Structure formats: C-alpha cells, structure tokens
Length: 339
Image 1 (cartoon, helix red, strand yellow):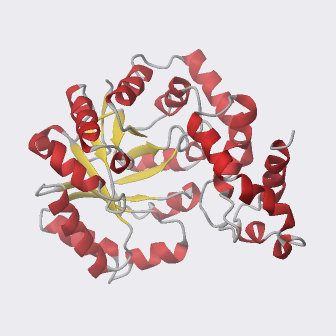
Image 2 (tube, helix red, strand yellow; image 1 turned 180 degrees about the vertical axis):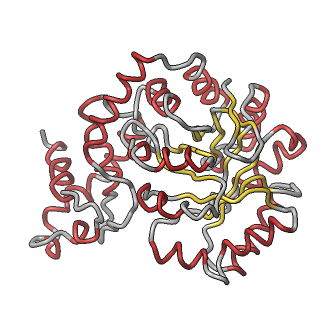
Image 3 (cartoon, rainbow, N blue to C red; image 1 turned 90 degrees about the horizontal axis):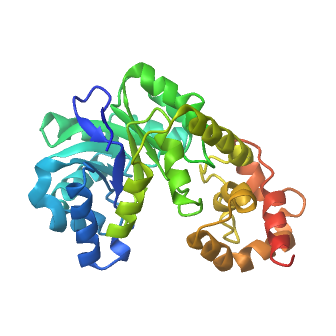
C-alpha cells in the first residue's frame, strides 16, 4: 500500500480509501467484515457522510474499537450553522468517536450554496467551532464543479477537497489538482468507477492511482471488493501505462459532463449518467451495474424525444453551464435500444 502525507495535516494516509456510502445496502455482518478486512490490510482512510443512510452507525458498530487505526472523514450537506452543528454532533455519536478527523462541507455545486455555507451563520462556522472544541481536526469541501472548487479554495479556508476523478471524468487534472498541490492541500479522488460504469475495474482504479492524489475513495461492500481494489494497486503505474491511461481518459472524457446535476429532467432522465457513460459504452462496455441502469432508464430515455416542452429548446440544455448537447446524446441512447 502506498501512503502519503495528507496535505499539511501531518497525517499519513493510504492511497486506497474505503468509501462507506453503499454499506447500508448489505447485511451488517458483510459490512463489518469488509471494514475490518480493509483495516487489516493497510487501508487507513474511511469516508462516509451524514446523508449516507446509516453508514455512520455501521462504522461506529464495526470499527470504533479500532479508532486509532484510521483517519475518519465524514460530511455535512447542511448550509446553515445550527443544522450543521447539530449534524456534526450527531455524526460523532453515530460513529462512537470523540473526534472527526475531516469534516467536509458536502456537495457544494452552486455559488449561492457556497456563499450560504461560508456566511457568518453558515455551516463553515459550525465546523470552525467544532474544530476549536477539539471535535473536528480538519475541514474540507466536496463538489462536482472543479472550476468553481479551484476558485473557492484560493483563500486557504480548507485543508482538503474531494472531487471526481476517473477515466470518464478527468477534468480535475486541468486546474484543480495543480492548485491543490500548490496550496499544499489534501487531494481525495472519488468515483473511480464513475458510480459503477467503468470496466475493467483494475484499469479504472489505476487511472486515478497514476495521478497526483493522496487518496482514491472506492465504494466497497464486501471483502472480495476490497481484495479487488487492493490488487489494482499492488504495483506502481510506470510511464508507458500512465501515458496510455491519460490518452484513454482524454478520449472517454470527450462528453465534457462534470456531473454538476444542474440539468434536472422533468421526466427523470438521469442525464449525467448517460452523458458520462456515452463513450464508455462504445469503448470499454459497461459493468453489470451500468447495464442495469440503462434497463431501468429505458422508459424515460425513450420518452425524451416526445416531451413537448423540450421540442424547441431542451430544458436541460438551458441549465447546463457547459452548453452540452444533452438531448442529442439522450436520443442517440434511445435509438440504441432498437438497433
């Protein structure tokens, strides 16, 4: 396992982090085994959030007795001071710990959300207060807009950023990662499989592993998945492989979607998933979870072309900050069901 200094925190963290978001979907015994196996095999970064159902409780039940062995990161998606402070205190109780190593202001994608969280009565003030009380050690931020995150970290108010980085979403490498490196901040990459779309798993994991990040958060729910992720990192990425992965990421990222989710669809088409996987489907094929997604989405996707309010000017495209041809990609996907 590769370890690195986590920004300016003085902590050494493992290159592979355990993403606990999906643990509530499996039996406790399975989750418990996965978490303990991860710790036994050198993973020392555990990532969760208050909003991940009972993920925090599972961590508290299964590994709180081993608290000195891991760096614990959680998140609050509250924007106001009172709600955020209450949620942080609840997270401490749920995870059966006296201190959260990293408290992240979660899922900040809009300028107005950032301003609200950073206001005098915002969530950031609650995090600062909890830090002063010794209940939080470091403060970070998460989001899906690497361009905005690059601006928001400039004042030095955060210790870390959590961002997307995978073969289909390499955009953090443009400005965000270099800015984080320059500022000496912790760099945590999430969604190496883009939520279960990218295969093969080893190739998907090795792309972010080849980049300048401290931790790659992979969502794992079993001992076998932990083993699979560890195996993908059992040797370093050499120059030739890295060049191949960077070129593949350039090709697969041609859709340009950041998954900022501005494009909410009135007929529930999951546009970011379709945009991001559009090239993956053609080039690498999909993991079973990806195939399942397209089966579930078939009715919505095939209804897109007939939705009257979008006939002249698609509603989703009016909301997109990157002006992407989303309706075209969705309708191409619809056609694929009948080809």
